[in-house]
Image (cartoon, rainbow, N blue to C red; front, top):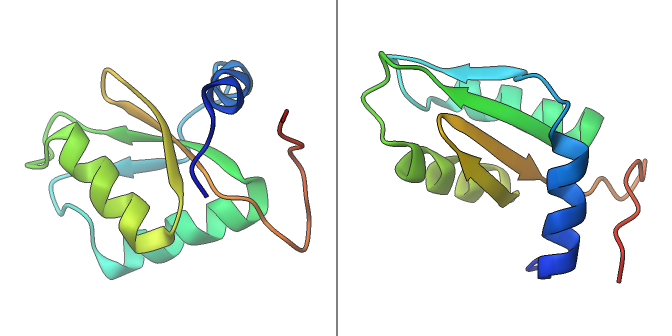
Length: 98
């Protein structure tokens, strides 16, 4: 489900005050990391991930791998921070504008 520009703008506003819950380091993106991100997305729907300086992954590459591994939408890439959104059908926390 691709997000509209209005929905992305809304999510960026919500994500502004979030702190990173996951950090991608020198080990890169592992199955364990994907599982942790999936759990965080299930709990919060909107999360911020940081790509650390010692990571060998470039931020755009990291965003693509995480999005494909979790089924999440990449909302924003700003510096080393990446904002991901994945709705939880069982516990809707975020109501997106139309």
